[in-house]
Image (cartoon, rainbow, N blue to C red; front, side, top):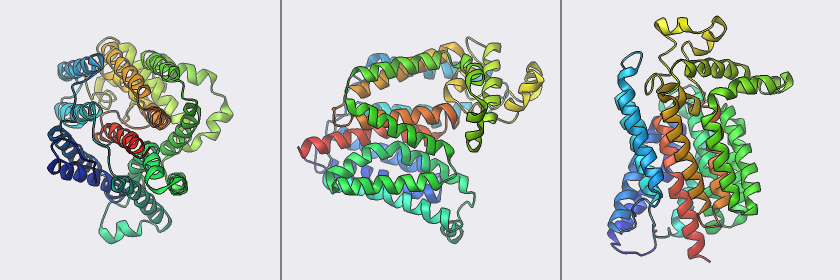
Length: 400
């Protein structure tokens, strides 16, 4: 399943188990969304152990990235006592956020042995089964959920739709290398059909933007990643100013066209949280506090027209959430980390850089309009992208 290397064959079985759990994660997530971070955590643990035994793990090559992430955790931990209401911020920081990010950094630093064809087939099959399950459930009023007693809210499948969109691009490369280009095209069509029939407007937008990035980065110019890194850095640092800017330039017909994506509601929410950043601009309200500032006396500090956007809500924008919770200090560290990650993606093998760009741009779109920043399923899904990209690069190199 994995090509030979030091410390094998025992390590190859552990690595194979990691890939198997990775393939299983998406079909399971369609049926029970809470399983995704658990299965991805187990997959990451298997890969770290297997690659460690086979001496494939390496020290971080980018110390700026490692230091910025470590400082972010320190700043976030120190901010916990500033939260408006004391909750489970410690658990969220270290269990939901820091652990997946640390595993992602370790996996990203690995120089793993190339996976075999069976690994590629297994990952492609996992994605195809997940898409088929999503289609069946959407077209049959959740018949399998009813039979198994799973949660009957179809929106709970949105997380798996988003993860499909993120992982699609490297898995397409794996499918093309192991099964042929026609099989890869069929897999892409199947996933696109499932996503566009789902309730996740975020996944649909991410699929479209990812496809555009995949096409643009076929040009394979290294400076494109530099431009993307600069754009993302500027966007993160200027995030509190962007809601008013978007509100001013976005025409009414565009808002009407995006009604299904709740564009008007998002603008009110973003303007509300942008106003919150002005109240605590340097250090923020404390890690994981953005869902709490709409309660109690803090709400009285907001203009009446913005209170509906902050009451019982969250920013729906991860950069804005960092600003609200950790202020300029946290936003600066996140901007540095994202810039370094994007530049590192540009140094991957040229055969996978378009897929890396597509996954990054899709993830940035989700981060800009979708979920809370510290959800374990989201960070775990992102942490697996280096694994999939390196698997694709390794298999293509081995078969060249």
